[in-house]
Length: 324
Image (cartoon, rainbow, N blue to C red; front, side, top):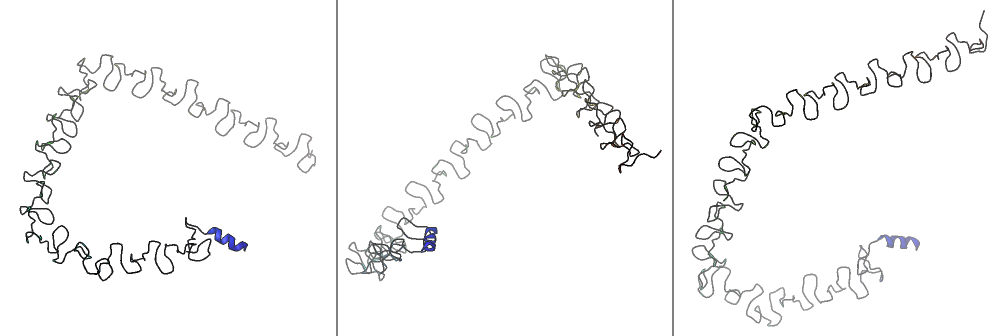
């Protein structure tokens, strides 16, 4: 029982109480309390409205009153009470709007109705009642939005507002330049005005418009340097100030004012604590006080033995005294 409950609880249940396998959670069968299965049909194959899966009732008629043989339920003939068959045609073969399958009009017995339009709504000249042809253009060559086949309106402009020459009513193209090649601010595509100067006042020869020299009113050239070769920040073209220091505080050799490089080592290779990159001071000892061989300043290693292998009491590593 417990296993059955666990299995049942793992199945998904829809709003009508059916599991995904089609079994009903209450009746434990393929039909609910009202006698309908998961798809809504009873044991005889009909839904609550009385129609089967193909849309026919017990008498064999669909909702429109036709059976599969094309007989109408109410007239018991192949025509309904309005005189039209299952496919919508009368006894003469015309539909409700007066056209037969050959696209002949019932009234005129031609391919055009009394108003002169065919079954698709076009006259003998190929235009509909609004004056537009099958291609969507009227006799003047414009579509319903007012544009011709090339995409221009009666004034010669396209949907974006540009004429056939590529310019709008203000005289600018889609890139923002007029016929002379200048934008609204008066500059060409390279950024120069008619006189050859950019918006900052420089020409392509690096002459400043306001002074007619290589320097602007503040004494700086096109690249931002004064006559002495320094910019507003006080640095030259190589990035150093008059003291030879760059923005990061280092000289051309890579040392700061205290004489240390970017890694905090001086020209001799020692840091501010006095140790080299391997961790030894100028006397050759590390922070623990041992040299590269592992001996301290008194000549003993970490275990207390000197270079001959004896401790301070004169005993070797096996505890034997030094030979005299």
